[in-house]
Image (cartoon, rainbow over all chains, first blue to last red; front, side, top):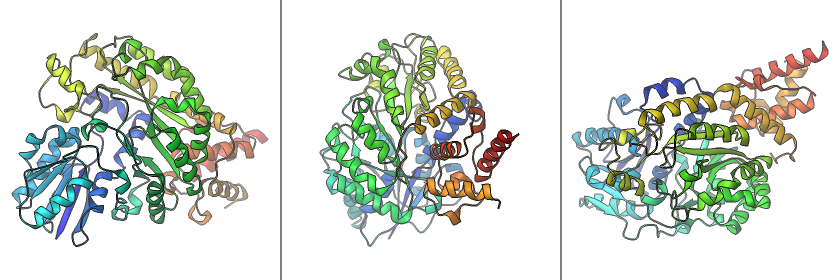
Length: 439
Length: 81
């Protein structure tokens, strides 16, 4: 028996003006390329919980229109996709089913829209692979595949039981960054967040020893790997964080992760991060405006951090760790002034990298439900426009035109080569002042 | 390969942890597994080693070993003239 594991990969942008502008902006393109080249961790996990007597084939599909021939050797196909590529995933699923090969579909989008997904698949997986996949495979073998497989108690799977993802399935030369997950979930309940909420509330972490074993496995294939921790917020528990970083130092890897701004308060932790090979932290600053941050998360945690942003970015970057600061445009508190405010902050803080995206009401989020209730969604089933660069709702304090023009303006300001080179030079000046990393 | 080229390749090997024999003058940094931030670390070391000043604009298109060699070489020439 053979299963084709397929992920719709790559970044999508529908706004033509942005596509045209984007190709001329080096920093915009570089992060997009990195994301496009990351392996699909969920498929590698599915492969790791597949029984040994089942052969698996790992396939990334960057463009479904380029899939000319289906693989007739598969007995079963499973497809995972984000919202932006879901129509492409459905198209691929329809083609396999038409060829008589059953299809299972999973991922964040179908958790929010299972009935829609069922129209294109034999079964829909609503939950985590470790819990659902063994049952799906067993049922398939017994010829009793169910229409829906739903995790009974979401977000309760004990990550200390996580299998090591099947990194051996990846072609060594195709990947410069390898994804490793240390945790699932996030303690900050942001209204717009899809990824860390759709799989259930709560924050779970893997034991340090298990993560180290995963990285050692990766090093067997890529001796000098760049690890991208596929987390929503890695350094929530500071005690765990210190233990983890100390264990990471001897492995001599380079790494990147996403976390929150609270790491800036712990100088010892920042030093351990630098020593253990951290090159960049991606941090959701979300906005420079207090009105816009108000209400973003249940406890207004991000609003309370706002006045410390400048100092926090300086502290982190002074420790040789670059910050990729993320900002969201279109929050209810945003007025047309927000574009200039964010640009000024990026310049003043000397963030090495910045990511500015449009507020996106992903299906299944609190934001989606609220905007729908308020009648502010621009159209129904706008999934292919859930790119984080396309506008799908009526902003509160500006027109859609203001927002789209402002976005083009801010991209031109922050992603132009001159500014990027200035920030790179600043990073060189910082690392001159620091002890050398262990290579 | 001249003395300067050898020295620069030695520095790249030492800083990146990549085998010296894998690094050729025409090697692409990305293919070697050297990302843009690691490349900046290498340039910082070279700047200090040769006592040269790399400007913002010099960091443009720094994608291959040869481009690093050319940059350092031109900075040294300017320094000597």
